[in-house]
Each structure stands twice: as C-alpha cells, then as structure tokens.
Amino acid sequence: MILFTRLIGRNHVRVYRLSRGLIGHRYRGGTVLLLTTTGRKSGKRNTIATFYMRDADDIILIASNGGRPTHPNWYLNLKENPRCLVQAGVKKYEMTGKTVVDHKERESLWKRAVAFYPTYLDYEKRTERHIQLVRLNKAL
Image 1 (tube, rainbow, N blue to C red):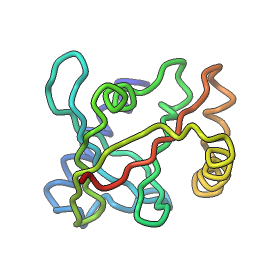
Image 2 (cartoon, rainbow, N blue to C red):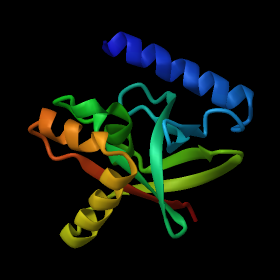
Image 3 (cartoon, rainbow, N blue to C red):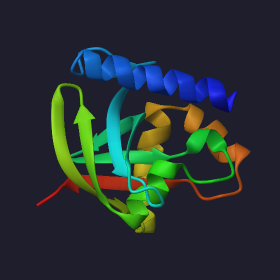
Image 4 (cartoon, one colour):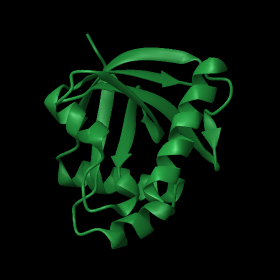
C-alpha cells in the first residue's frame, strides 16, 4: 500500500508541475500544494504533494503520514531545515516552517483540519504519536 501511495504522489507532483499548478491543486474536495524540503540526511531537494489549509497569510500542514507510526519525512526535514519552497496552485513561495506548539492554537487548527478533511480523525486513531501541525510563513 505504501508503494502505491508513493506512486500516486509522484504522479500528482508530475502533473501539478507540468500544468504549472492548474491541475492537481484541488483533490478530493481539498486543496493540495507542492512542498519542497531539503533532505536532512541526503541534502537533496525532495518534493511531495500534500493537503494544506490557509490561516491568514500562512499555510498550515498536517503531518499525519496517513496514521503511520512515524512522522512524514517532510516534517522531519522541516525540523532540521525550516526553509522550504511551496507551490500552491500557480503561485510559488519561499517559506519557513515551524511546528505549532501552543495548545490552544493547535486545537483550533486541528478542528479546522478535521472539518476540512475528516479522514484525519481516522489517521489519529491509527497512530500512538501526536500528529504535528506546521505553520508555514513567507521567508524574509
């Protein structure tokens, strides 16, 4: 199943890029962006497609990893090097990511995330780890 998910993800990235963000930004009723991080071990740039939410000018990512027991690589990469590139539709941004640590803020954002994509509740039930939320803001 993981291999299938990775194949779908790679194809999503490919179509998103080829269409310059015109195809692939909307998926299953949600919004998807391309996130490019720097690998914490390899130092290479890695791009994935992932759901996102807006919070004013910031972007919120949910590090669910489909409810797997480990954090997604992109999250671990951002913890090591918070600078990233984002393509949301046709727009591209240099951004910086930070884990949401304030409990009230996290709870409010989590409620929005679940309303946005209810499957996050299933992911939360599948894992013992705390699913992290990441706030991306434009790099200075």
